[in-house]
Image (cartoon, rainbow, N blue to C red; front, side, top):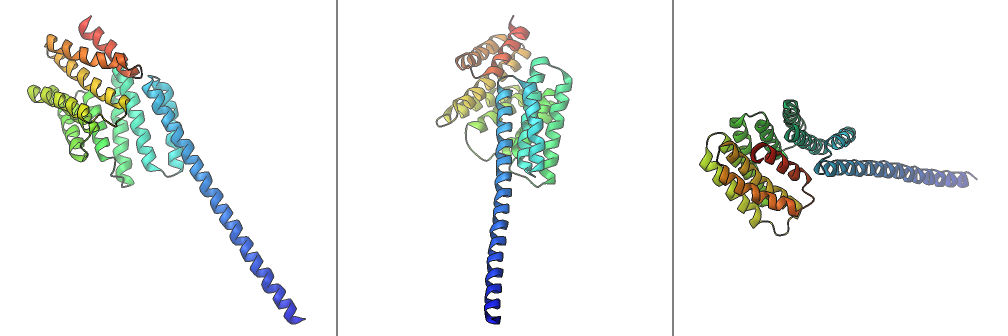
Length: 266
C-alpha cells in the first residue's frame, strides 16, 4: 500500500512539474509574441509616418511619429527611437523649407541634439553618420555654414559604403562648402556627387535615386541663384525640374520647385 502511495505521489509530482513547465513556456511565448506584435505595429506606425511625410503631410506624420516614439520607448527599442527622431527632424525640415519660419529650424536642431543624446546614453553607434548629417542640415537652416561643413564632412567620413547614398551626403557637403565661401570646390563636389549617385543607381530604389539627384541639382541651382549666376542656376534648375516632373512620387521636390520659381525666377 505504501509503495502504491509513493508511486502515485511521484507520478503526480512529475505531471505537475511538466504542466508548470508547459504553462511557463506558454506564458513566455505569449509575452514574446505580444512584444513582437507590439514592435511590428510600432514599425508599421513609423513607416506610415514616413509615407505621410513624403506626401507632404508633415503634421499628420508628426502625430504618428509621436505615437511611435512612445511605443519604442516602452519596448526599450532605442534604435527605433533614433529612427523616429530622424523622421521628426525631416518633417520640421519640410515645414521650414515651405514656410521659412525660424522656429522650425530650431526644432530641427533640437531633434538632432536629442538623437545625439540618446545615441550616447544607450551606446548606439551605427547611426553616427546619420546624426552628423542631420545635425548638418539643422546648421544649414540656421545659416551656420562652418558648422554645416564640419558636420557634413564628419558624416561623409563615418559613412564607409561607396554607393548612391554617399553621393547624397557629398552633395550636401558641396552645398555647405559653397555657402561657406569655397565656391569652386563646392560646385565641383555637387556635380561629382550627382555622378556618384547615377553611377550606383542600378539595383537601387528609383524613388531615392530621383530624390537625391533632383535634390543635388536644385541645391546647386539655389546657391548659384544666391550668387547671382542666373544662367548656370537656371540650367541646373531645369535638370532637377525634369527629374521631378517625371516622378509623381516626388511631392516634396515639387513643392521646392514652386518655392525656387517664386523666389528666383518669376
